[in-house]
Length: 73
Image 1: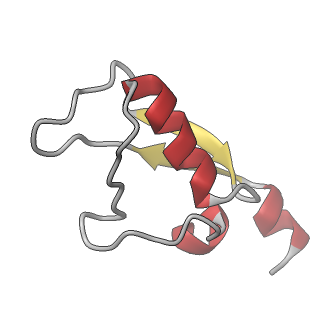
Image 2: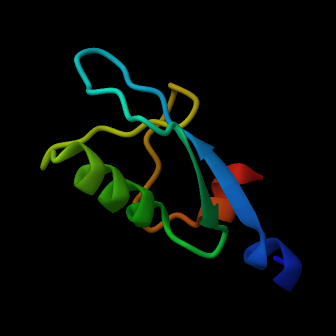
């Protein structure tokens, strides 16, 4: 992994599914060096939910310790 890849920002687009509340802002920028856990914690705070299921491309749920840049690539 090159240093420039880890420093880049990644745009995260969030869509609700089922009975999940809709966020006012659905796109966020996050550092590629951050772990997926940071996205989960952010969404928990925004939605005021303890239990949260988060999927990438509506197909799989990554491990919380996965790097954002790895999921982006």
